[in-house]
Image (tube, rainbow, N blue to C red; front, side):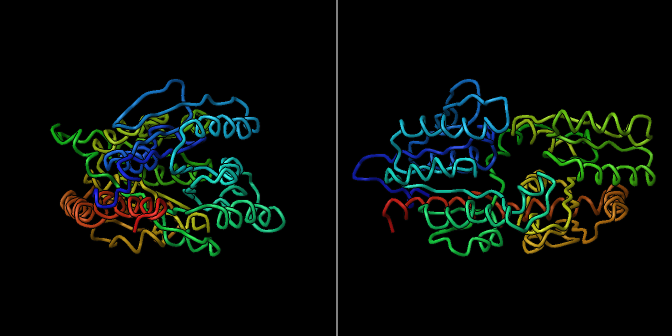
Length: 385
């Protein structure tokens, strides 16, 4: 991979990643992008929320303390991050949150090279999180601030999917780098015995109350099909856990649930490894139509049979009924039936698991597919071929 490395003479290039919202050990930011850059000779600093500075895998992590109040945090955190970032005197600044856009524009005034990593379709996501419909003046303002300005101002925009990149039609320089699984993440667990599976079904990641309600409907439907199963949710907020417990007390399916808050990335993968079926659900809304949940590839890498909503981008990469089960409906009964069928047919589940791992090893892994794109993009920005 070192063919992509660009140095100015014999000087190693310093790069600085910045996030004001994600944890330092975020899968995409730290384990994929920062680790790859460090392994290929770049001097990498990462600025992220946290309590103490540390170094891991050659990446220097500089932490900024979170402000407790939401609106104040969105103002204060970018200022703290900007101050730290400028001290690094990096050749490239690579940021990951829309909150940092205005700070990044200040960097451009200082003639810095800046990459904006656009994780989500924020023009659709932000109104949804506020309980508003997209469209109208509010969406027009968001589109100008979050799409038009960044498209023209920054040296490169990075997207996790092709369809999301197409939303930014005016971007002068852009690339698609998918959130694929990093194969060397398997090394920490390869020496362990696989043993029996602790959980029948797992879901990774934070979820809105609406999505959680639907998934509880799936659990309820599954409980009507089989008596014994366990379903672990990993990455829930304390508010969501409290909501689930208070609204479902006494319901029979409650005994099947294990509810966990967010854990460190490698711990989450241990829990995946201890499960049989990986689950993913998204409603058919525009903000999800341009997305691919990274959890899908994590499930597959550890040999889980996946049951997921048939999102458009996902359907282009996977083969339904071969390396995954892609459900095209929005009915809880259909998801429950798909899971139940797998749990009732271990041989079929095993065949899908084998195909899933093969898909990851042969085509859809970070090292083979996406790391070269990242390194080439950096070389291009720094003046390489």
